[in-house]
Amino acid sequence: MSLVNGLPAHVLLVHFVVVLVPLSALTLVVGALWPKAARRLGLVLPVLAFVTLVSVPLTTQAGEWLERHVESDALVRRHTELGDGLLPWAAGLFVLAAVVWWTTRRTPGTQTASAAAAVTRGGGVVRIAAAVLSVVVAAGAVVDVYRIGDSGAKAAWHDAYSKTASGSHGD
Image (cartoon, rainbow, N blue to C red; front, top):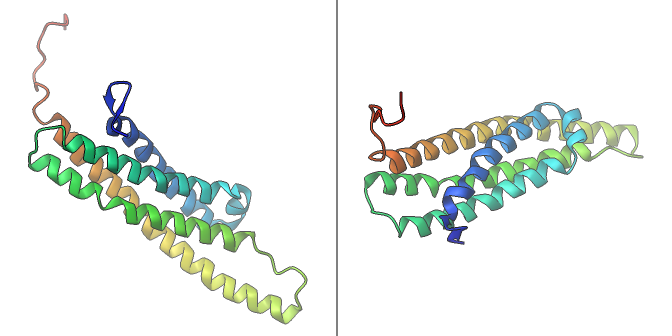
């Protein structure tokens, strides 16, 4: 995908990433730290993270097309390099969302009391590990999106405006 209604697709798709990554990160952390919330969210948690994961390479590919159609400079190259690093964070969000969903949806069922206790202990360890990893990956993903967005804004706007008003708008 290169153009949408005459505009570079990257300029439009980036808004999905900017919204979906922090939303997925927040939802993941809430679900990981509060299992009841994860159970209420149900499949929304991994589906949201999956949509986020899919949006990242679509946006990156559209950005690579745009990169070939703008003047290359250090700011554009820096933005491109940073953008290439978001996919692992998005994949981490998805994997952890699936783990949190899976661990909070399971119940011991009709097991014996000792087997249920063993599952609960093992599940507790997995939930704690998933919670810690979720906080780390969510924070990393959000910080990375911020860094990428900041570099993209600098690349797009560094010479495109004046710091003083033009005065032509009746200010």
